[in-house]
Amino acid sequence: MANFILMILAGAFNGVGDFFSKLTAEKISPYLAAMLLSLFSAITIAVYLFLIKGPSGNMSMTRQGFLFAVLGGVAIGISSIFFFVMFSKGVNLSLAQPIVKSTLVIVAVLLGVIALREKMTVNQIIGLALSLVGIYFLTK
Image 1 (spheres, rainbow, N blue to C red):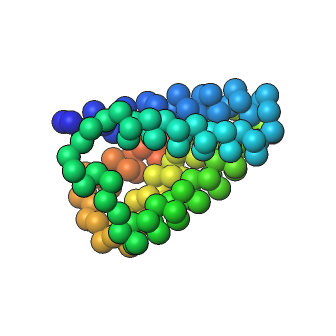
Image 2 (spheres, rainbow, N blue to C red; image 1 turned 135 degrees about the vertical axis):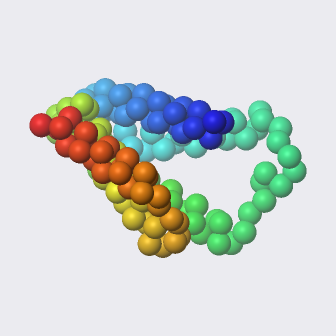
Image 3 (cartoon, rainbow, N blue to C red; image 1 turned 30 degrees about the vertical axis):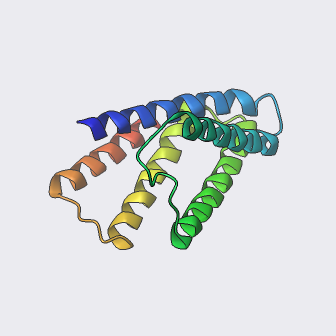
């Protein structure tokens, strides 16, 4: 249950972030908006790391972990640029968000199943299919 709550909170804050991204893209350059989003995201995480005292080892790092973090950051940075460019062109949040997030889900599931060899149950496959059908109807 605790993991489910974390998933809901991550999704909720991501949705709020997308809302502010849409508002931002209408006011400043999409490239500056993407940079500011990344900067303040990094500042937020730095403050969290500074204030939260966790078990020792929270700041451990391996070369491979560092590389994966860099590659993930680059991918998210590129995604942010596309996101703000899209919004600067006037795309509605209510249309863009479901399409972007459904694409995110498809890519993440495929990478999890193919690259990480994660297993999916029949119920998860049905749930994913129903979610995609729901998103299809949201965009019509």
